[in-house]
Image 1: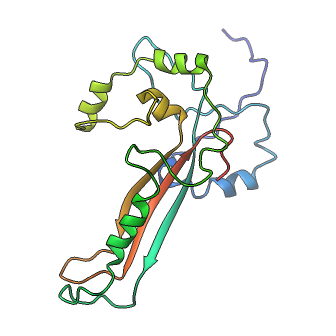
Image 2 (image 1 turned 135 degrees about the vertical axis):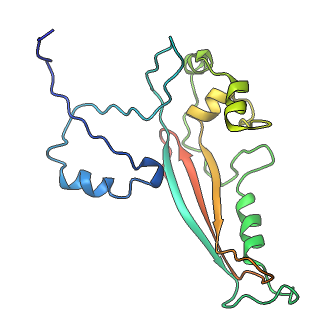
Length: 193
């Protein structure tokens, strides 16, 4: 229309979010004066469905870590099965961070999690979401939701804990004495990692 906007708009486009945005902190610190603003809008959300535009009002942050367990300095042969297997031990330890229903059981983890209002829950559950299409898209047999929460609430408004991968394993018949896993926790408003 040729009418100038009554506000200044700044764009910061960053494509490394799935890899941890390792240089974003440095960039923001270096250009903090240039990036001063009154409002931030994040567009890291799903596109919704045709005819259903999306405005994201809830976003989760992330705490990520590599967890390492070492039980020795050399990997003995599997016939020497009195050696503690670091891969098995680490997998058992990490699985103890949630119960059989997928609820995180770290003491204090949910203490600061704000309860969703009835209106927020209704809005989330009114969002078009096709569970069967989601399962088909990812080749899943089933989905897992936090007890008493819908898939939408679980994905978009509740904290989560994931183990993404184990490292340090080797092919062959040795017992690994070192194991490393990459884990994340999606955090919601008011949670302090």
